[in-house]
Image (cartoon, rainbow, N blue to C red):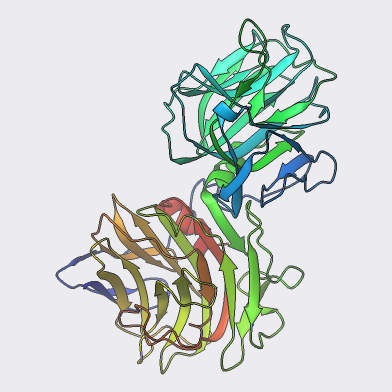
Length: 462
């Protein structure tokens, strides 16, 4: 088992005890963190349509529900389920005209292409009035790159799309500057000033295929999955798009929305046992665990259940007791905490903080403090994994330890906060003594990226 051991000298600058398998460092907390997107508010303002494709083609706004042509089916998606299209089966969805003419808009979604090479174009969707300039909107994969067109007023991306891989795409049009922009996985790919607006004032909006005009087949189809398709009548900021692609969930645990995901994916959470009403938190309110067995279950954190996917987990914790051990984060393939399972964060029997992952050789990679967390005090914990940097630990914004590992096994998609459920003592736990956590938690984030030290600084200094 690879391990790093950390000793708390004080809250802001932990002292480090190093084992031979870990690299460590000390630093003071930088209160001026620099620029970061991680605290950007996720907004649904000006949302015209949203399709979660959770076994339905309904529009969450209630305005533009889709009907299927040639009956596309559903598969496991990036979040919940996704809709599956086959080019050869000429499958697509259609709804009435959505007003995008002469205004700014953003279309963003997750996709998983199963074919990018058998023909020139694979169309995610669009809206056409006629085959004439500025009257035909389409968003495609063309020649293996993302493509944003108004018919003879188009922008092409730069990265070749691979099959059988999830991506996040965003297509943004700024009507004031007549600029089209394409984002891939939260990063700007290409922008073009076209001096032309999208002007169609009728025509059906389609997903899974689109009329792209010109001398091509009347409608061009798509092969693969599409998930969480959103149409907004505004320009989403680069930070919003970055978080749509990278923020898996964010639970602030505030009293008005105690178990509501305030991130872009609207994950579901349920509580088991007697959880107290919201208490004073590190930011606004927090969630307090108060019974012998009480916990919160979150379903669908795909970044954790994907092999070797980079991630960052961030949370504030305020223990009222650290003796006897406890589970802070438990991950499992089943909602009852059983199946293939791991205690990711928790306390040892003597109250030491531990974070775990499992490498592809089925070994636990762990980092453990050499002294207990302070009682009745908010402490910020962040765990970062990437195949480049390994398994990293930050406490109160300070990088304190790392263990070198380039692989990890998937965990989840069920993540359980506050305890390990009953009859899960067989789960991998390393030095964590699984049990009920006594205290409060706040500001739970999971990102599908290795956050930078600047990002962590922001999360630790809200």
